[in-house]
Image (tube, rainbow, N blue to C red; front, side, top):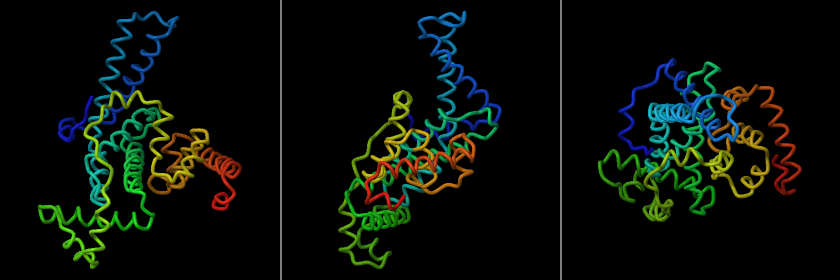
Length: 285
């Protein structure tokens, strides 16, 4: 299953009832897959029946993804304008966040999927934005200036209907042309063209989680990689490593755990980091 911009308007939005029904079908399909490959099945369903349930579940999964692509566009388009990065690239990264949301969503809690999905989409788009700008090996202050320049360049390009020149960007910012041209000489990594959602669905969950934090500095990424998955998720969400900081309540809702548990996991993660991080870094924890 590949995603294109044309898919945005083709799939109708889901009602709350449809969200629940499709989520049930997805869950049933996953259970059927597990049962089908089990050496000693626990139920009397035939392999054909299990295969049908699995296919229904996969179709439901595709429908869930396509029906929520508008959420990805809501996040990726403004992010592309602000950063000057490829809108297509950020849209595809947002799709990975959408996949993560579909896989983690618990329909039994009675919440709308869109609220939950936006958190994951923003996290993945934010991580990709920081990662691509950070990949230029620029100091943080210079990367921030580049982000601002590319944002103005993108806005002027849309306003003028043609690529904005360095002189026009410089005039808008009140900066010398040489200053702007020097920043614009740093090119983001080459964009990629497509994303195969079926392949992304099969990526190991832990590897996907680690990959979503690729905007972290090498030291932080290495340290967080040593934490248990849930402790890492809590810390990254709470402290805003991928996007922005979140309250205990928002973090609990996003991860599907209680506020009390969020507090405990955060305290445990920070204590664990104090024990494993270099002395020069531990002063900040």
